[in-house]
Amino acid sequence: AQKITQTQPGMFVQEKEAVTLDCTYDTSDPSYGLFWYKQPSSGEMIFLIYQGSYDQQNATEGRYSLNFQKARKSANLVISASQLGDSAMYFCAMRESTGNQFYFGTGTSLTVIP
Amino acid sequence: NAGVTQTPKFRVLKTGQSMTLLCAQDMNHEYMYWYRQDPGMGLRLIHYSVGEGTTAKGEVPDGYNVSRLKKQNFLLGLESAAPSQTSVYFCASSYSRGTPYGYTFGSGTRLTVV
Image (cartoon, rainbow over all chains, first blue to last red; front, side, top):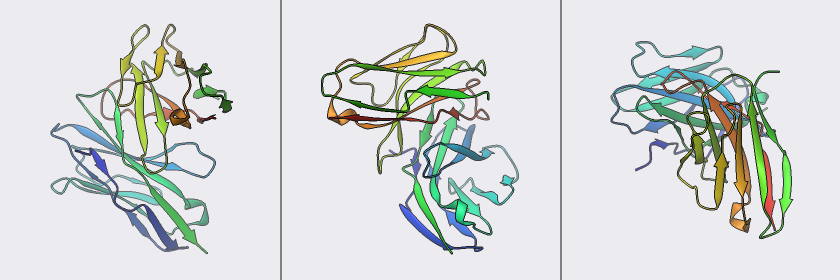
């Protein structure tokens, strides 16, 4: 079974609008961390935001917020006030407390339209 | 700047040739990883290391070997390159096991095997 599922291969959003990128995960470990990374066309992987499984509040980092719904096992990334520079590939990832590695989703390609 | 450095950034190999990709980090991280990224498949773990002198197989280890003789370096070797190994390779490092610790990624190596 896939540990991380991103069901949106591609998304479009109008500049200055908000967009939600979906991510669901599968784990039996009660302690885990969820991460989002951005990969622009230049190729580097940029860390955006982190949510711990025991965190009571949804994580926020500037225009990025993570909509964490533990019972549904979802960790959607919300980007507010989209900018042209947000056009990139976005990856959701999970790290379990019992494991040594991250599990990555297949990514969502976001295009911001002027 | 502190971080993860990968060399080379680009390489074209002929089928059957060998090469070594070097990953170096100066953050005193214990954990290091090699991933490959292919379109539509996200990042898949090749090999990883939890400390100097240790290595372990990931999801797609066949055709690759690794070594971690020094804590700061993690080498990925292709003994006899095949076209199926055409990919973008990312090295990453992490401070430790544990959910809050994210990856720091290198900038990637684009390898083409002809």
